[in-house]
Image (tube, rainbow, N blue to C red; front, side, top):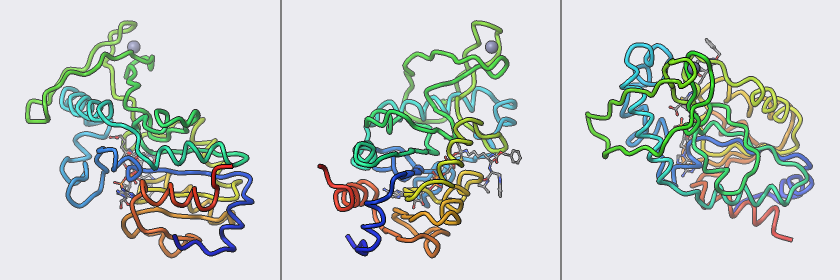
Length: 254
Ligand code: BJW
Ligand code: ZN
């Protein structure tokens, strides 16, 4: 791994480390990313028909069925070496803030206790009318096909439709996690940006905020992004390989 020695020293002495993750961190767990040229969700499905409040209003069974299929995939997957390396890192630095755009719970299952979910959680649906959380049963769905439609359940309190617990296009990010994420990005010493295309706002602005605040910024990605020339170090490769190596080199087990 090609990490310049001055940067290693800078990272070792970083008191507050932020780890910011996107779909690429879960790709090696078998969860599809959004914008991959072949397997990306938005390559194969229309985001406007599935990931907007208007889409749910128009065709709730289409949207709910699709998200239940996605929830099945999350439940059937396991954390990978990248999730585990991030969990281990938390025990080796003074302070670590983990921010994710992912709606899966693989960071938690890898042992990261506190995760700021900017785009919600797929396993925590709630009532579209009164906002109360809804406990969902384990989904039993056939393999994806055209019959993926499923009527959303109704709220036991108010009868409203239950909706997926995720943040759709045009919706605001949850206030508290967003505020905490902004504060962490502006105040950290090191910022690791892992497996995100950095095209979705306002989340993508966090890395820019860390750059402006002169934190050491490290990007891990298998592909080029708009941040390649802006970060302190650009590590090109799969997260499940690169992150354990980076953590072992900079923050070895005591
Ligand atoms: C690997 C790898 C491996 C692969 N190892 N790497 C300003 C400018 C322009 C537009 C906007 C703006 N402000 C707001 C907008 C609109 C919109 C937006 O950003 N649109 C852009 C796409 C143009 N944003 C919003 O609407 C947001 N809300 C908002 O701004 O509210 C205020 C407001 C309200 C009303 C009007 C105006 C403003 C909400 C955004 C919600 C995003 N929701 C989704 C879906 C969540 C639910 C679901 O799961 O279905 O969140 S979209 C999707 O993108 C998902 C992700 O969290 C998000 C980011 O994607 P991510 O994680 O980066 O995945 P990919 O696939 O893009 O990239 C994967 C990367 O991994 C790639 O780079 C690979 O190379 C890499 N990789 N394998 C390492 N093994
Ligand atoms: Zn309700």
